[in-house]
Length: 189
Image 1 (tube, rainbow, N blue to C red):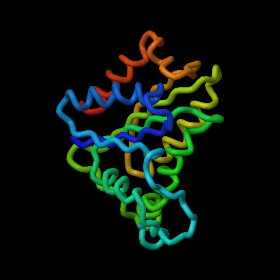
Image 2 (image 1 turned 30 degrees about the horizontal axis):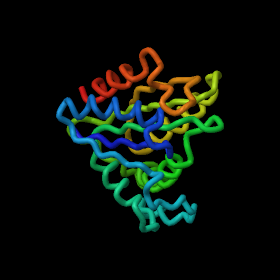
Image 3 (image 1 turned 45 degrees about the horizontal axis):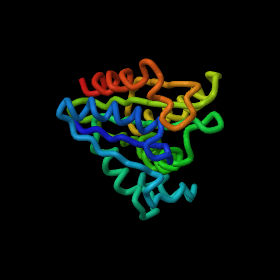
Image 4 (image 1 turned 60 degrees about the horizontal axis):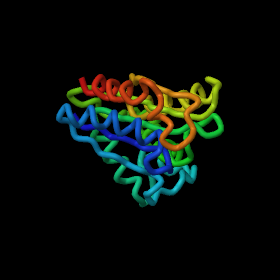
């Protein structure tokens, strides 16, 4: 199986990346190919809302998002990992999601959803944030759900960890890393 992992955190070796690494490790140990995208290190412009994809399902911006489009189209599994900033997914991951407007047009306007492939398509959402309240994860989860449905991922598991803020603090959580690893295993079952 092919797995696309989208790392929404701009913080290198931060809590989100540590969680994602565990899910990736589980998939790779199962013999699956994982492609990791780190949007904060890529040349990806935001959506221009130009409307050009309405009729074609293709984005007119020529940048590194083209690699992400190809990988999403060809994958069986998608992992989206993001910190929660101001009750939302990070700007880096939101840029990826917004640029998937072309997939939305392709699916809903042109009636040509991404083909599910021989294994179907499933997702995993990993979120971490310093807040004590649930609302940030609910908001981030709603955005992620819309993204997953747009790229024809009809089901996904969600893991989130609150009150985790300082870099590396996730290592002090009693179950977070093992939960991410087990979720990665379930994803590719």
